[in-house]
Length: 110
Image (cartoon, rainbow, N blue to C red; front, side, top):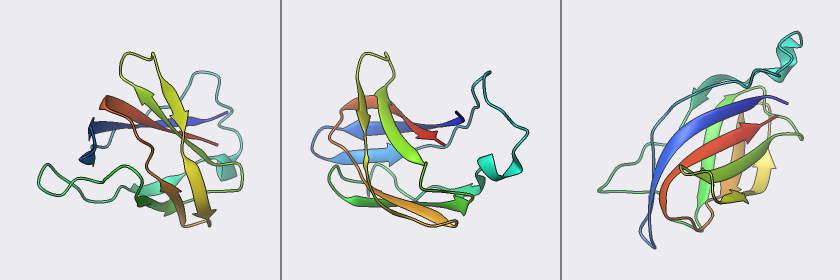
């Protein structure tokens, strides 16, 4: 299973601010080129215009599939929530931002 991490800062009831960071697990099988997500584009956001919990978020790239899952995990690794994926295509994945506070990682599992 491939994991990609995105560092996200969230604020209670105000939303989330996305910062990009990617990593792969050591047990990932990289022999299948269709298993990699390429050209990832996170939505623009900032302290002045955060992404709000409960809102639709779209991540663009190439290689998303029906097996793509989005998970949010606190930096302390004490809490993890699976996002509700609304739709996916090879070029994007759309999901609802879950209600989480503090610094979080957004994890793409494929």
